[in-house]
Image 1 (cartoon, rainbow, N blue to C red):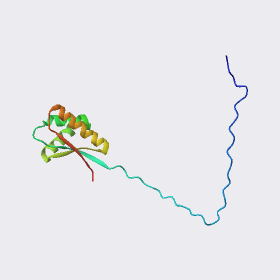
Image 2: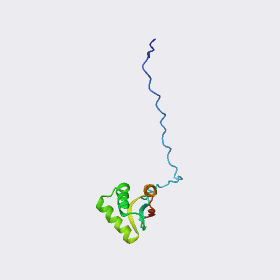
Image 3: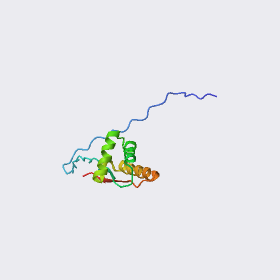
Image 4: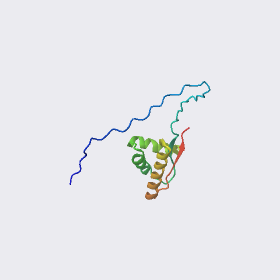
Length: 122
């Protein structure tokens, strides 16, 4: 059994046109002020030095979680070793928190006390 339309579909009725009401002079006009959004607060991920985590492990973590090449990872590792801490990268808050969690989890699984924190960039 086939059902077919016997008439072509009709177009919807046109909406009623409203004419603007003339201004009586007592109207209040609000001026629209442009609002500019600030860029999000950025956070730097820092690794802290300890006397137990092997330098090679720190280099591997920098390569794996922060996409650093071997040379850059080695330079950051030496900065961490010599200065007590080093910046691994700068990210938005959520990404920085994720990076910190990834580093801490990897260090825990490997049995190292490596510490990693994030702090706002000033």
